[in-house]
Image (cartoon, rainbow, N blue to C red):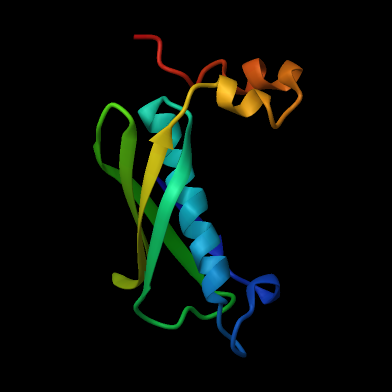
Length: 123
């Protein structure tokens, strides 16, 4: 799974650089999209980010995420942000698989089933 993302003034930390929190959010987001590959709803339990290089604003970053391994209840997912074959940050996370019913307490139930129609496992 990959996406290209450009951090801009909405994401500024130090002058001209992306804020670590914005980078962390981008990692959580790209790792969350791997749940479509895993075909299971899940929620983030832990998220760790290693900042290797300053991330400049207005520079397209390639965000890549993959499932390292999974168990009955957990998904271990990793991600990286790179540019020109250099890694700027890496991330790892543990996601807990949940039943769709988990979200019914937080959202209008009429939208839940439509959202997950092609998402959940059928096996």
